[in-house]
Image 1 (tube, rainbow over the protein chains, first blue to last red):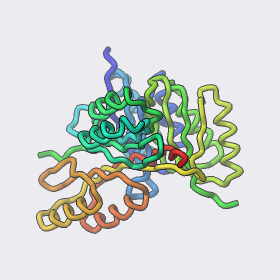
Image 2 (spheres, one colour):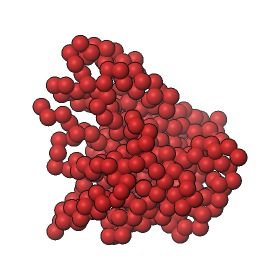
Image 3 (cartoon, chains in turn red, brown):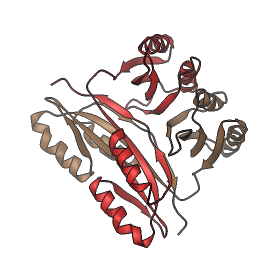
Image 4 (cartoon, rainbow over the protein chains, first blue to last red):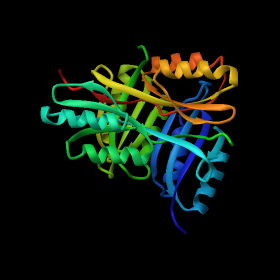
Length: 162
Length: 162
């Protein structure tokens, strides 16, 4: 059985212990979580967890059943296979030597990024997009010199049926 | 002792079980995690966890000590009290009745958001910024009708010393 990427969007009670139990469901079966975002929804008592994991389809069905059994789980939505919008955001701190600045700003412009901090030796760039766009940007900035990055991981919402 | 918001940036081995153990450290002490992002760094074997939690300063020092003791923890950086860039991203699916569309697009323009999906009855908007900007946007869109949101939670990087 092939392991595929699955995106799960899980609405849960915003309470201590919920994230640890949900993450434990995956690690207990030896599945790694590739990325995960958790934050409040419009209703502060409810949080949304968006999670990307690699698993075969039998394992993912079992995990979804286990998720439903947790009392703090309100809803489990699998986005994979549906039509959805996905985005992630990355902050990239890039070495900005005087001779490279024009090139960095050209890349920022082409990728519609924002420069969110400027120092003597670094620029910090904010970029949003799908995995492909972000990997393309990082591969262009890498030879110039990336000092560090912080990535959100993927968030996603269903598209409305047309 | 007053509970304050703390932002921790934690570099960890990208392995099953690490997130569950770290989240468990907080819930074991009854502290809720307000938001959390985890994703790969440039080095695929290392993930960065950015976490926002409310705790008093004694508790946060104890938690940091416990984090350091975990064998999969590489580095713990507390950003609170330092000079740093913080950003979060939100996808907002807003009800777009014909009579509200011009107003929604005006708001999108003022807040420098992007419309990332258009349906018959909804627009999906992508916005990045700090908490203040995002709350201001949501409070403007709320009376128009927000169907659902997905938030990344905060990511952050140190500013370079000037």
